[in-house]
Length: 497
Image (cartoon, rainbow, N blue to C red):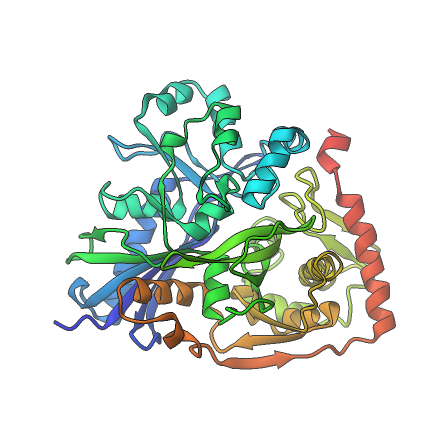
């Protein structure tokens, strides 16, 4: 039977998607489901790793059924995932020893702020390209070891393994045969030495966390073993972090090219070539991808909560029924009537790192309506991206004049226009916003020897381009109001609690 298909697991922060691609990288089928978000305290966000694994398997089987194919027709599997969420599990039972700690979690804010100011924090930044922060996993591992009965003994016993979500899924899919992580995901953790290409031992020693629980690091297109869970032995040949995956699939492979993914959060990534450079304040340096041992790097600016702010409107406030309706509701009013919503529901990353920032609604008046609130939510995403663009220009000298956008929220025409207006850049949207999954498929094909990177440069066509239309004086006035609101959201937890 011919192996004509590639299966991709696209693991997000709020849900899991499985997609079937043909070898020309057309999407044949897909299945999606959300999973549970646990928020036991204002500074804690957790997932059930077994739920993620079980639903990933279910979605893969559903996608196969929709496409009417069997495992014997799948040539390879690729995995792409949201980064920095991590799992600790018992390698003997295959069960997590605690809920997964999500990248939006802020329980280590005090620890991160203290260590970042010390020499160990400065040294770690120089080696890893990322300031010590709440989602650098060695910190919350130490937190769990200190506060949860039994975990310190389990971690030190040699029976516990660590993994980001790609690593966890690979270990489960291969039934414990492969404990490995993609280089792009390793760099995102902030404890991987980008000069030496190894885990940065000093931070592990400083916090007394055994580095032995961490996985080996592989190329993003590589041999990750095989799975027999879908009716045949299928090799897993690609794994790449979600933002870097979109950067690759959108052909941002030359230094200076950039993309913006609007998903749970908003992430702007700029290719900086094959030389590691420390980032300016407000940005990180990451491994974009490693292919055949050659590493490319990128600068990244991020906002943790953007698309998930829309989800909060739906699930938390019950203000909308579906995310898709935000465009129509927001378009029903010409502006926000002076309302600002700063979506720092899980802290601030850019233009400065502030884990104690929290969401803020400013400018409420008697004339404020639901439509104004929805529009302010979308505008908050655009303002946040303008903050990143300002940092990039002022602190790196790089001017981004054309920005490619992807991710579910990018389907929203009003949001895309707002991004163009407030960043003053031309915004191009591809004909498919599934850029993250496409990158996972491309890595799988490369890892399986079925394609070369140069074969995969013109896969995504541009569906629509947005250009700035807003009056300059109005843009500047609105942005000044945003900066005022954003600054008031800063240090909220530390100043008021």
